[in-house]
Image (cartoon, rainbow, N blue to C red; front, side, top):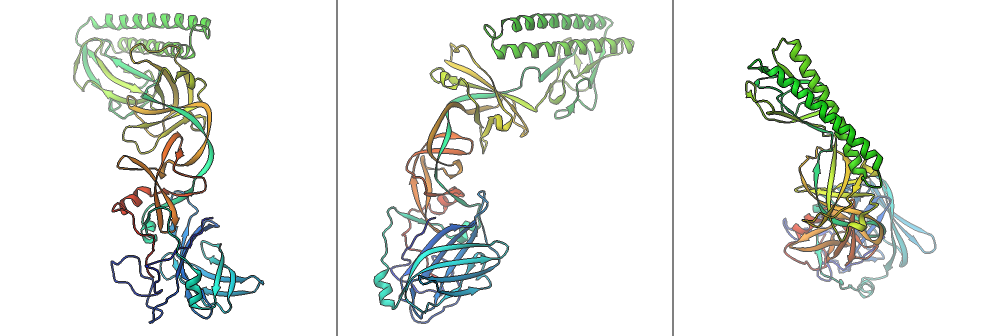
Length: 514
């Protein structure tokens, strides 16, 4: 729990006074007193029961009304806090002998803000407790406060503490209008990682390119469109022959497909016999995938020959050998094609391979990796690849590329978000090592003109702009290696908005008037 007591305005301020529109701070209602209230002001920020309470009040003095300007925020959702829109607030002064003085208000001053009036009747130390009842409920203890016998005692007893760092102000009304949340920096264990470049590619066997088996004119079906989802065996087009010699080309295509299948079968037998001593797991999987594609090509060639024969020489059908999506169409309806001209490309987009290129000095660290994380150029959020997301490590290369001195590391991942093969990505490959560090959400990090900063809460509306050094990242968490301590509360959502609103520089630690 963070509790702050700050002297507000220049030394003293009048609670309840009207502020001109556009002035520093915000207005909380008509003036409560004509005579200036000389009592020093206090500020408290407390998190409890899923609530954030930021409260300003004058020092408590016997017999004097003390308005509590209580800003209640629903802080249960770490993705964004929201103001409390209705409820009743009860303020209780619990004295050391157990007796209580209770004050309440049954409506808001305005969204998020309640203004109960506390009028103490006896001096001494007491616990100040606020209870919110409504759609959002909770109890927040401010802790021990002192009730003074006179204003002069209050002035002498409350001394302004100078902030350790420059404080910038970001008012509650601004916080409530944006996506905003805070969280505690904590000591935690995260996975180590190494940087790498990478590319998203289609897995072997998930992509097929169909070419015209004969010379002829293309007759398309409605499926021959980019983005169309197709099943294995669907007819995408027909090629109507322009000469009687095309039947021979169909037969030749079938013979070539059968020959390729025989080669693929032999390669798989060899790979299975030599795995894992000589042949890697990746090579074995590639051999299996090659045989699957070869068998589909044989089936497709046989289908084209059957279709050719059945049509009396009227055309050859182009059938998709895989289920997936049409990604490229290379020929238009009515085009005259030569034997082998590419017509269409189909790909199953539901799974992808991530091929990361790890520099050779880091390669030993990633053997046994449990996953990776990557960001597509222009992508807002990193994509996690590990068992929790359905991803897995396929292979770590056994040799260093002689040109770029990197080792390939291949992962497979599901693709529900429509990632595109061919995309270049920035990658962090996780290592088996675990790192103990101060950890915060990556969304708390802000680039301030090349300087990495976070905003550390000094109070409900005051923040330190703190320069930090960051280290390993694991999912949405990032390690901070210097500049932050466990238990400090940082802005985790909306930090960039805080930067924009305070870009003019530090603002004095004194708050705004009420």
